[in-house]
Length: 284
Image (cartoon, rainbow, N blue to C red; front, side, top):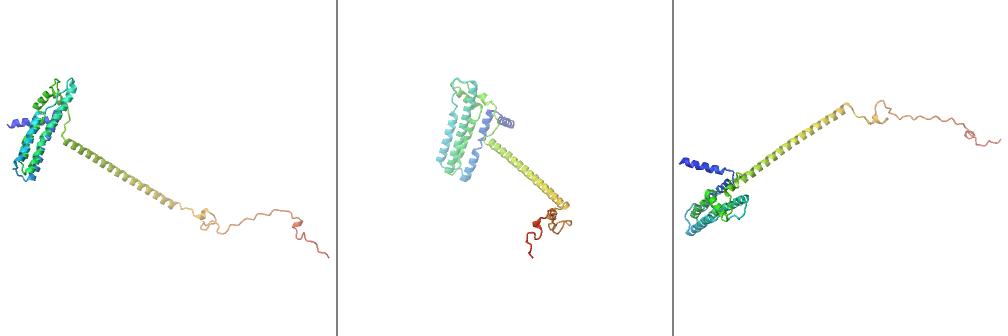
């Protein structure tokens, strides 16, 4: 018995890890299998764990669950149009089977919501338990099993066009889980961006430290050069630049500079230049 169970579990795990379209649909269906459990826990907390409920609530929830189950059994893909090529038939067959699988998942989750509302209205969990008993088997109708694939293929071939549904479900597809894969990808992207920002901030801080160190070294070198220049070569005083200015060197003259007199030109004195030359002589 345990060997059979292990064999079935190994088959299911292998089907879940299969990188094909059928494996992708199976992962999508199994993702919604535990969805009613949180609803059951919340409803039980809100009603206090009571099971009994009025009859009309049980009837309402049960009727909705039965109707959704019958609709999931009856609904099938529409027939393929005539004159399609093999490639077009593969694409359309896969697209229509995906639509039917999504519709059956929605039909399975609708009674759960109705049963939760009826349980809250009646004050007991019995309506919700009835809907869960009829909703979980509906998820098997959405899974890509041999029964569902065969019925869908026959419905698509009602007008004579061959549906290559098995070939379409065998096409390669990435191994992804609904919602979980997208959240994991966003988390990895956020981590990469955070690491990039941290690296950029660290490099910027290191570059700023190097620039400040280089500036400090350059300032110290300039200060030492200025100190050496003032110690070895004193600046010239104003007296050394302008002669005769107070505060000059000792060799410079402290008094006023003598102005040299230019020699008078040897001009010949005329009669007008003699003393009394123009004065008249006194008469005796």
